[in-house]
Length: 233
Image (cartoon, rainbow, N blue to C red; front, side, top):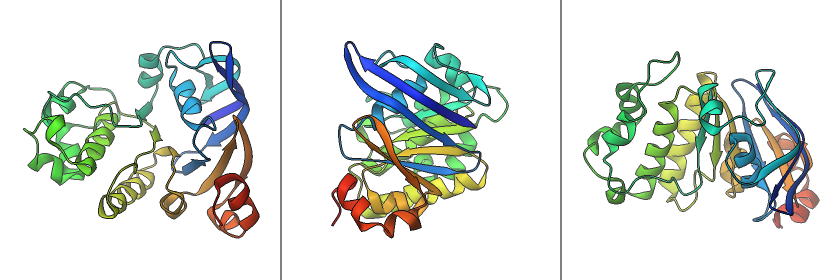
């Protein structure tokens, strides 16, 4: 579904990605791991066509079509959803307003009703503003907002960051449900154990390069890899 080949990106003259290569298949959760500052968020932003970093070479193909050079809204229209790090909600808008402003009739797009069915807590808080929600509720809304665009793949940047354990478990359950519905998910995550609990495959990034690929079981069986690239002993 998503194929990234030899991708290089830079912030101005500062290169941050050096030939990163990975893929995400339909109905698959792929975890992208690595220490802070290794290029994980830069890769996701490059896929989404955001202004920074700038793709300097390489390929990003979605359903066999090159998307490098497209604007973010064009990439979204093709079926790529984005849940940014930090949620990026509007503090003054209610839960309902966040969802209603993205309603569309495109095939596969979620309705407000479907989001509320998937996240009952959001329906209970439908008139609360973004600034009034808990961390877990904000993350549910960020995911629900992305689903309103009708994605076939979700790019999720640190979805469990700052969440209580019960909220982390809820996010893991949501990811499993979305996978069962056929969505591909590229999951950037610092919470190693949460990522390994849901991922089908894992990539590790080091200084802008993909340096390891395998399954969660393979990774947990390699303590030297965990120590070298993730600082886990």
